[in-house]
Image (cartoon, rainbow, N blue to C red):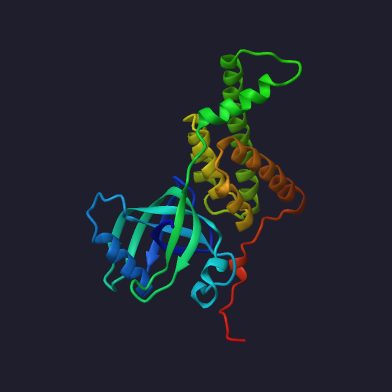
Length: 264
């Protein structure tokens, strides 16, 4: 069995390191906030799991495990502001990723809980070592391990720089179409992440900020290796730039067309 954690389904996935503000008004999630606030202030259990909704908008009315994607991300409480009506305004930040094993629906607590297993990030050194092996195994090359590893790490930096440039172009195209609401801020954040020499942070920022389909975002969330995630984002950004330039089109979230479920 996996670990049991509180669950908060949303229309889009959350990514590690990404800030997620929420307004809590439903009674079951008010209870969740009270349960979390009852823990000591610095308790590392002050979090809940965020998973994207795969189908439907009232998860409890269908089989919850089938209605949700199987990869999610922890939202760790950073700031909580109680409201006069009993609700809460909160700010969270994405933490660890997890795989959904099962969903528990009960009356106490009234919110969903999930049985999960935690997903580890592939270490940069392991990624570099893997790529170094492929470099060293090339028929025409015979390189010492330390040189091959250095080449592999340099290629990660080059890939990160390329994705940053592609995303800067993408943000400009989206802003020109009036399809984005936060273009300047995102562009500045991308440049900052790239300048900070943090390919993983850049990859999560692109995954969360680009106007991609939920399926594309979920695929990026599920990818544990920064190099492969950046490579996928490079392909996605080139595809999206082509759509923007030739069709002046961006993906529309399915939730935009949601209507209340009926018993029919």
